[in-house]
View 1 (tube, rainbow, N blue to C red):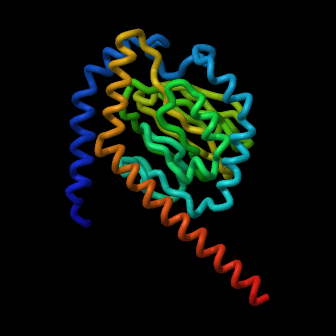
View 2 (view 1 turned 60 degrees about the horizontal axis):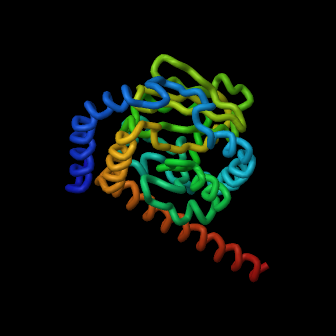
View 3 (view 1 turned 135 degrees about the horizontal axis):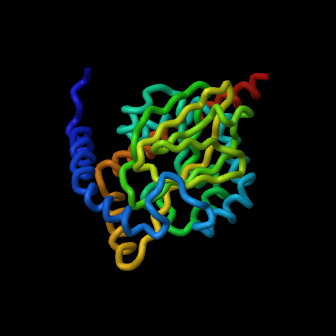
Length: 263
């Protein structure tokens, strides 16, 4: 096995130290949360959800267009290296638009209407399209920080929806097209797609509602996370993938042009 680089070791150390430092803060956030401390949350506590659901077909159509280049899309662990602990194949693809203050230029360019809708979500910190292949199982894991909540919107869901499901803590849910769920991903969770069809969802992280001045402190912590080696590494990986994707697309276009001239 290749020796890890200094940067990789720095990222791992940052994650370990961050978990230790944030643990007491997360306990405090759970107690102060304006929406409670639960696995899943009532959607009526988040006024913006209705607007997103009204436009779900717009998001679905842009996500569906990505599937034409599915094999070239990034594996989640290729962008966020710590995901290698829960997935190590090419059956969980991701397409980023935003991540902790970073705008994925290619994502916004290819999904402009989705990106515009994401910018309207109060406290949006991360937004991406998550594509799960048939028979894929994402192993048990937890999210990095309790100060944000995770939002999923079903876009393309297998016909046998109940066989494509998520467990958060001890609670199970399954996705529905055009329908939302919001959960606390710091509860251990895992995902199964026990069908022969692909599952596509919109994946968004939003700030957890907190009273003042806790909300301002939480905002500062999330901003600091955006400058951590963990996030900067993901940003660098995303930019490198975008260059590879554009180069591949350019080569394909050039090849098609040559074929037309020869024909």
